[in-house]
Every structure is written in structure tokens, then in C-alpha cells.
Image 1 (cartoon, rainbow, N blue to C red):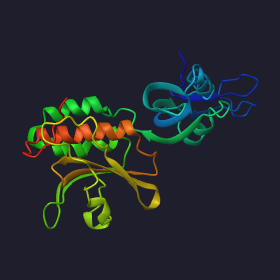
Image 2 (tube, rainbow, N blue to C red):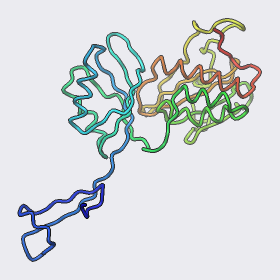
Image 3 (tube, rainbow, N blue to C red):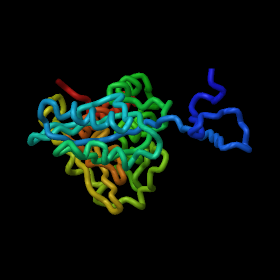
Image 4 (cartoon, rainbow, N blue to C red):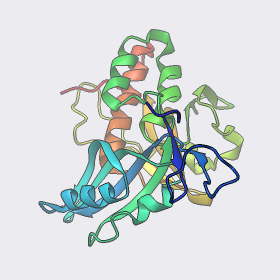
Length: 265
């Protein structure tokens, strides 16, 4: 068994001498080899058979291992996928170049993740909200940023003066720092009572300074909503906005808000 610890590598002089004689020509060096990291990527690629396989092959050449894949959107012949990959440390830029040989492939966004922290998928978050009772709004804004690869989340009711912050995640800005237009939820359609909301308008997203995009979805009535901020990330896609709308309404219902906007099928 090698005396070199697992997770490190050894380089030895060409003559192969490993007796440690520093007076000879042997030079031995033990270098720490950092464990791989987990990265979250959003990629877009031509929606054609075989394209994803070519991307996987290109990633493999760079020691990048695809762990999970979620389809985010498909439109106009382009597929948008969220990937979680395992790759050597410091590979953010290399990940962007790894599949340059695949025509039409692009990495929209890449960020490192904590390797052992479990990020809730939308369905898992929905299950958590269903059992959270009065803490549902707090759980919603706590997990939304990780679930959607965003920066912060805040739940607010603008029906009071001043507006009431119902819950906020770490890093959420104060309401005074948000443009007034972002706190106007009049463009978020409220379905009539007892009607199906399938045709209702999706939550909207708006652009801010410094690469910030903010999505908003009603929690209850016309005045309470959750805002989700994503800084220097990919734009919110329709499927994400739909999930945000459903999760927001589930949280309001679980929290016992009397004006919760329940989904009716």
C-alpha cells in the first residue's frame, strides 16, 4: 500500500529512486490534490437527438461528470437544461469552454455548490410547505434561492402602510431599496374565485441594475407576493415562473392565510 495519503499525488525523479536520498538526483514532491467540486450549470443547446450526448462526451474529456439533468425549457428548436456536475476545483471557466466543439452549445450560468448540502427540488419544497403550517412562508423564502439558483427571496404584503415584510431570506434587501414598480402587483392576474387558474398570467420578472432579475408571484389576494431575486444569473424561464406561482400559493394556503389563492383544477 502506498504511503502517500489518498487524495494526493506524488512526482518522482525519472530514475524512479524513492529512497529519499537528497544527495542523489531524486526529487520527490507530494502535492495536495483537492477533491472535486459540485457545480450547477444552465446550458442551452440545439434540441436535436444526439446533441446532449456530444456535450457529455466533451465534458468527459475535461474530467467533468454529469450528476443530474433537469429540462427547464424547450422553444424554437433550443433546449434549456439545468445540470449538476462534478468537476475539478477552479473549473468554472473551463466548464464554459468544455463543449465549445459542439455547435450551438452555450453555458448560460455556472456556480459552485456546497458538495454535501442537499438542495430541495420544487416538488420536495412543495412537500415541505404542505407540512409547515404557520412557518410555511418562512420555509418558502428560506429555500427558494437554492431551489431556483437565485440570490434572495422576500415575502411582502403591500396592503399595509408601510408594507409588511412577512418573511425574508438571508441577503434579502430592505423594501426601501427596491423600486416602487416592483412592489406594484397589479399586473399579476388573480383568477376569479372558484375558477381554474390554468390560463392565468405567469408571475412576471423584471430587470434591475447590476444584472439583477426579480420574479414576483402572488401569495394571496392582490397585495401579498413573494419576490425572488437572481443576480448575474440566467433569466427566469416560463417553467420556473410556473413553479414559483404554485409554490407561493401552496405556502399561503399552508400558512392559513384566508385570502390564499388555491389552485383549482
